[in-house]
Amino acid sequence: MSKICAVCGKKPSFGRNVSHSNRVTSRKFLPNIQPVKARINGKVTKAKVCTKCMKAGKVERVY
Figure 1 (cartoon, rainbow, N blue to C red):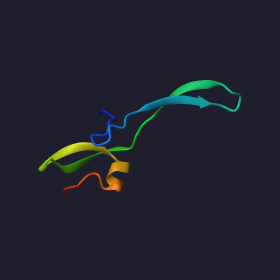
Figure 2 (figure 1 turned 180 degrees about the vertical axis):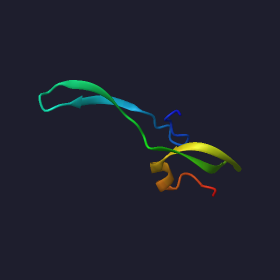
Figure 3 (figure 1 turned 90 degrees about the horizontal axis):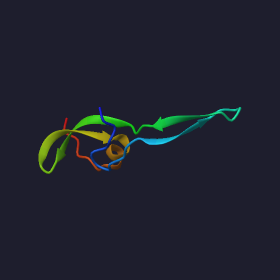
Figure 4 (figure 1 turned 45 degrees about the vertical axis):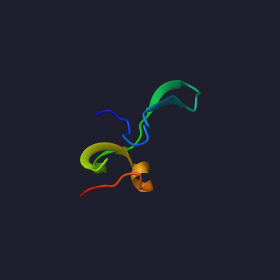
């Protein structure tokens, strides 16, 4: 499952874990992507949308 929001285009970003002893390892920050049924361009389709877009009302969900 790709971790890209269909509305805002948010995708994974990369960073580093830094321990107390200052050892560094790479890590990935994943957006909270959820599959939803939404009305897009007048049609009901399944889309992968981040929770921030859902809370902001950028997506009209269909139940």
